[in-house]
Image (tube, rainbow, N blue to C red; front, side):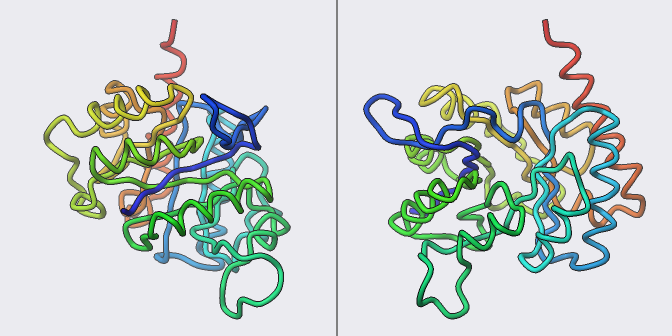
Length: 252
């Protein structure tokens, strides 16, 4: 089974299970995820991060910002409002593991979270479980991805802080699911644990899509193609932050 979630917590017990929990989570909803994947690297990633960081401070909205592993330290040292997030890691301990990603190295570089089990880098269940445990040990939040209803329910039972629920078929298409996927899978996760933050971002291209998923119960949204392929990063991000701030300010 392939699954994914974000865990920005340390250890606590819930319903008899040991799971991640943070006294002060690195993000609170509504929040944005900016996920350049491998579209950008080096100077271009930093340019996007600096724009995002500036707007995050201006709108007082939290952001999960992913980057290539070699760019994490640079982003962490040059920004102040971003939850700098690795795009993967491996469940290894210091020692042997040539070519694998050591969790301690991510934490030392300034990462505060890690994305796991993305559709472009799926993990077997046992590997995902071990990797989430290693993330907790070094204080990294886990961002775990899930596709189907069954996967969303299974990942939620593993106790992540944040889950990315997204139908794989919608990733990178610029078209959101036309049915009730967003509302249904968000409800599935919240029924398991209301404290898990849910990101719905598959097919999201702009502010109107973000407004829709927030209205349907998601805690966060954002994306990849809708941001990095837009001709004006500042403009599209400003529109997204505006919607997120408005949704926050409209709460009773």
